[in-house]
Length: 239
Image (cartoon, rainbow, N blue to C red; front, side):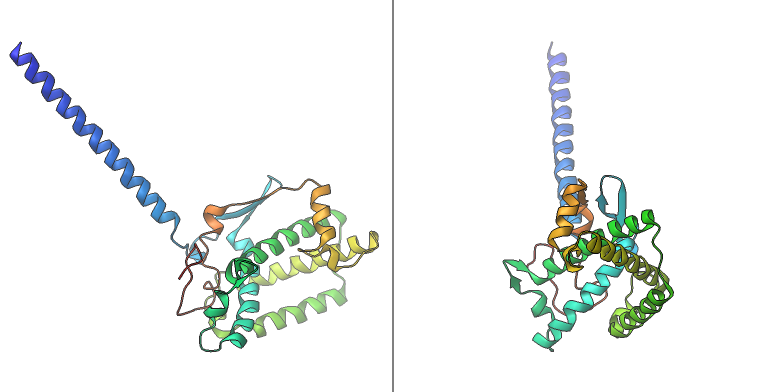
């Protein structure tokens, strides 16, 4: 009987040991996953990551959104340098309508990308093509885009020139459909912009769903993808 009790106690100790190890491992794994989920992604190394799913069908990746990220970073940086030429990041950190400029800019980039994807798709369905005059305008806009970029942005492009030029081609077709839609409905071109009232109504009428993949999109260090700032902003918006 004494031998059986010793064996039982030994088994219980072994079981408790394994339970402790299992619980500790689970805690460590959870902490590691939580830490990793708060670390910024290197944009150029995660181009195939899905940033948003449109209408439960089409996945748009970080590569698909690259143009909008670069464009919006450039647009905000121009304002930021006027605000503070020595520390432009201070502008990115400003609260506007209770939201960081950085966060609002990232949201804008996403909204523009979704808008243009949807209207580009509609343009293809309608068989729209660019006229020779529109192709010339596109080339001019491409030239303006490249000339407006800061040198540091050109050095830190996460995608190729060809990818960005093709994005601008798609945008030109999306805008042509936007104009077509506005004319057909007797309203303004701006009303069907990414932040326009009629565009939002159009989304509702077509029952289009937009699901942002926050596990990817929230880990983008917006404002520091093609730009370099001495002061950074964390995912939570705090320095």
